[in-house]
Image 1 (tube, helix red, strand yellow):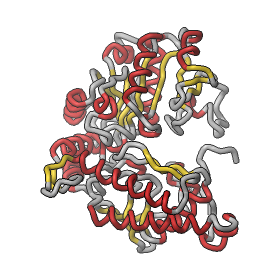
Image 2 (cartoon, rainbow, N blue to C red):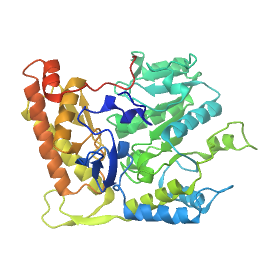
Image 3 (cartoon, rainbow, N blue to C red):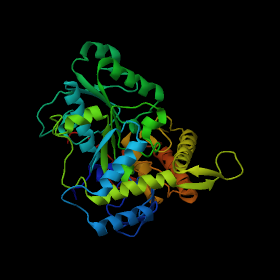
Image 4 (spheres, one colour):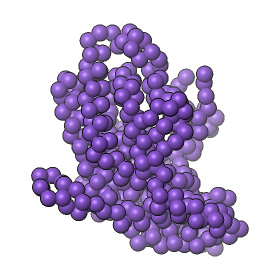
Length: 430
């Protein structure tokens, strides 16, 4: 049966056919399906849950907010408190506006950049699969039906630093009078300080706005995001996902000079505005989540040191993800799968890349069969050693399953062993 899902990333296209369609309970890093099956979850609600499901400190803060009123005719104290908190920890944050999803925040950043520069074109990295549901991004995808033609975006290669096969700076020298901004999602590329600095330098040199989409990387790579981790400050950034530990909250942060264009007495940009953008549950959840990330600590053995050492929240996230990267690379090599799959990225948000979705389907099938839900790899503070060890054992088993599948016809193997559909990309023509 075809179903309409609130989010395309939750649709059947993204999961093997033995994955449950509906989950009814979650706690820590464990989820329970409507058929009673239980799983260790590394997807963590599309990477939005960083502390763990039903995290008491966050849920208690939300319940207290609800008791005082969810929405008001004007602002509320949570909005001001979170604003000051973000100003203190996000390097580019001189001003901030709140929303409910990353698409709105990122589109508002693009709008500000165009208004500030008086230019239209936005450079988008071809390696980053998604920025927004708004027309400016979707117009250049295979699912652009219903959108008037829009050529105000251009693709560039982050990996090669080229645009249309030509050196990126050469393009900028010729067309900078038309280019408003360069945008980048650090979580979907192998981010380096040097490349960030290079992009920052190009934006300064050619009068463009630098936008970092930190909806995924924000609060996950470090408390201060990628910009704080590498010391490269964008003009604008967007935040979301882990910001609220699963509650609906996003933010646009950046330089006051740009933000002033969205004030009714200083500019003519209609920025972020929505009835529910200041409702208290998301704001309260975000405050509690950020404070917990700041305060959380534990004692654990790290590396070769025999005595347990004090570790922070981000130490733990990186240790869990780092172990998954290291051991998965061993399993890939052991099974001779180097030509088919790779794993890398930042340890707190590893990326596994398959060259053939049939192989990914086979891998996911075996993971689900053994009780692991891993559409993404999003470590949380609730993933302890036992969950990580079981996951690693299952990855080892799943890689061996993929190796066995490669000894014959893949389509027949899937029909005989996986009994269902092959996963498909979201952005495709039907």
